[in-house]
Length: 266
Ligand SMILES: C[S@@+](CC[C@H](N)C(=O)[O-])C[C@H]1O[C@@H](n2cnc3c(N)ncnc32)[C@H](O)[C@@H]1O
Image 1 (cartoon, rainbow, N blue to C red):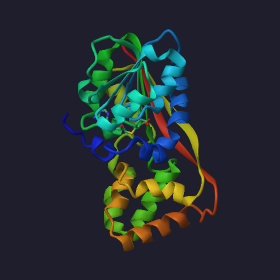
Image 2: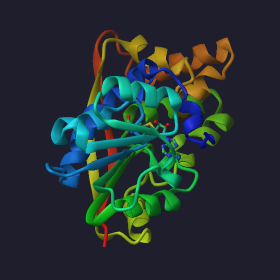
Image 3: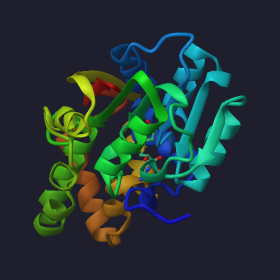
Image 4: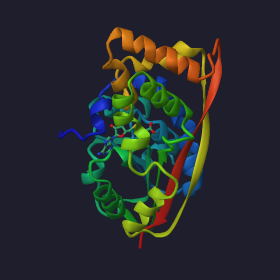
């Protein structure tokens, strides 16, 4: 399968992803499901399902047989299948969904359209597979401010390497991560009755190492930055991040904000 830009940093073990941003996934999924008004007897598609945080929450609401999930990462497709028996999990990209026209009532994507090589094409595909009157909804982290883990990470990265940190800061490189941008994408895609807003969730950490360790494996753009440093620079990044998070000593929690958009297919 052709690699997308975003998929490249997500060819990792699901357990590693779970300990990084995946930690926020189930709570964010419940918030997105509520915002999109998902309810039985709808049939839903999860685009860019990853290991299946949103897939699992959709299956809990609609039943596994009413959920289809798609992701380009082979390891995530495998993990999602194992975690959610009965869900139809397929390999594929948002820009070319392996799903028939008008197949579902609701299409959701959680932290995905910002990784797509062609987000407008992805939205056109989401419209195609949703029936008339159906809903397309999605969310993207507020990398610039409200996603505290990644904001602190990129501020620390900019501190230890101003040029490379600024060049890879997700607040700079990620599209659709500022207030209103996702809703504007939804409107440009021709969705009707477009509405947007924020979803705020929280994740708990046992200690700072619980947050730091997954980053050293290369998961996601932040992990790719951290794992690409030499040992000395990585130690400096670790120290800067620890300080920016308030020098936690023991358990702590971080809030995270995502922007969401939803619209109706006509
Ligand atoms: C931050 S993860 C989110 C995973 C999952 N939605 C969740 O909430 O945990 C981004 C996901 O987007 C997937 N992805 C990247 N590019 C994609 C594309 N073009 N189409 C569909 N999914 C893509 C990755 O493989 C990865 O699973």
